[in-house]
Length: 112
Image 1 (cartoon, one colour):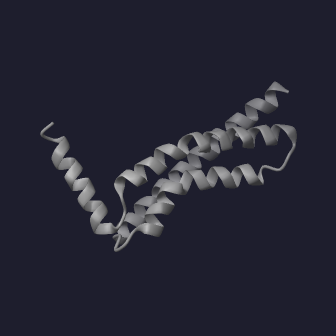
Image 2 (cartoon, helix red, strand yellow):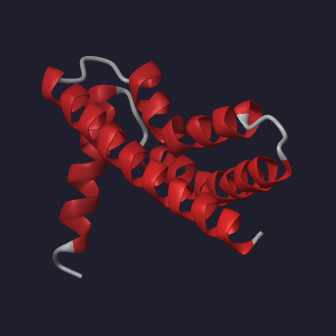
């Protein structure tokens, strides 16, 4: 308990310094996970059926970056290195997601 209170104060202080509420960021981040997952299911379903994957891909991308969009839009005086970290996180996550989707699509094609 001795660690939690100072950590919470530090985190909320960061939010005040940069105009971003860490709790809202966390809620968006966690809340977007099921919608991102459903978008991926929708994408693979459309691909399997030969239907356009553009809309589910855009949906997945939006939910993937939604918390970071909040940071970039609502944030004030955010240090430049935070933008680099966000970019690296998004790039790494995008590559991982691409590989997972590719694997899922390949397995679905093999099942046909």
